[in-house]
Image 1 (cartoon, rainbow over the protein chains, first blue to last red):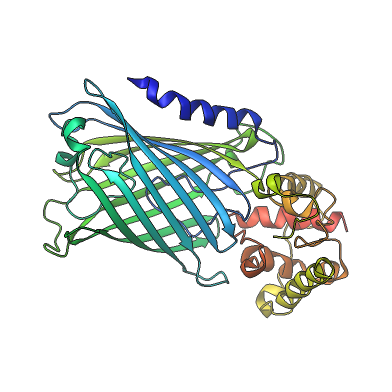
Image 2 (cartoon, chains in turn brown, yellow):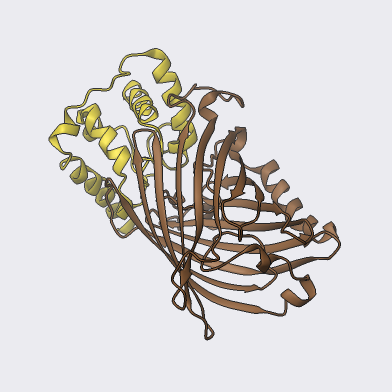
Length: 294
Length: 116
């Protein structure tokens, strides 16, 4: 069952082995919330985000989203997600892809920095990555057998307004989410709010794995806000999730987050883990030395 | 012709941005100035975050990624440089480093001063 996930994981491990020692992921350890920190231009970040949970009356599942994030410009990041999941006593399947773009409309840093986010999703009803919670999403959406759930195709557009501030050593981010199934479905709304901070603000100045400045701690809260047919908190899911990020040598980053459901529609617990590596200036790998003007 | 004009244009654009640093930022001193450990840590941070564009010798690539060993950088105040690191120059490819803790931006500036 797990064998279908082996090729992408092997690819990721190979990337980790051959990544230049100077590259460095510098993102927040959020799993759902976005900050205004974009990918550095020319860099590619490869990350897996895995969610483990067991809905009431159903089997344990693990859903992984593999994320390829490229800094197209200093003000524009484009990203491709490939989603899959494996459910115990069921099957492991590919559940679709998402393509998103984040753009900073203001070229200066302000107290609150807006980012516009546009995403197209082509996923099946079996997708369980929970990269956002919107509308009346609940744990009953995660209980159906894969053979049935995968027949439901979801072509969705998603808009987010990301507001984010880096104040002193803290990041505080708020996301407002509007998602629309491109069929005859209502707009669904959601939110995500996060705060995070390095455990030590001064750099230790050396390549150590366990120095306090290598750790970022935080918390995020996210959930659904109903839809245009029922704009209420009735039957909505909400979660609170402490976060821990660990910047490892060679540009790798590990993140971990246990999430706790706050309503009866929510999963009791969802455990998330992330593994990321940043490949610097990959555009220059394919560019000749003479034609190198970006 | 293009390869000659581009680095000049980028350097000029960044210089112009440095001319617009708010007075309160311009006058801010580096609290870590002159501390050898800050220079060492700044060198480490430079290697992690800056070197991929500005090169190990801080001379840039001679194209879009400018040298940091220029009269304009030398004459800028520490406050100017901290403001510029925080703001970036998104329109010309320089990301904002507001995601770094402020103390680490000062460490980078301590290092930049040491290599001028």
